[in-house]
Image (cartoon, rainbow, N blue to C red; front, side):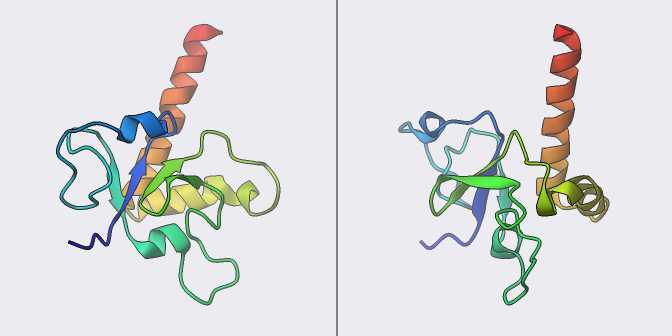
Length: 120
């Protein structure tokens, strides 16, 4: 069966998290069924075709391939130059539009910040 969804996993995941003989997710087929992940479509990954500064996760440098071509990992650190300077406004817009990947990224940022507060 051809899978049309991409898996989006948290920044803390490593390639080893994809291994195992457990049943695979029926939607993406790339991640063990018991693992927490989201599904995103091609427009979320690559942005809209033909647009120079498209808003896809890869174009905005918000995600990277953990296991090409099916599993993307949210980047823990995002650069502060170029398009990535506008990540905050873009993320807020996508959260307000209800994009699940944006909610996960926001939750990951919040988790990272609360962890830092405990260590300071």
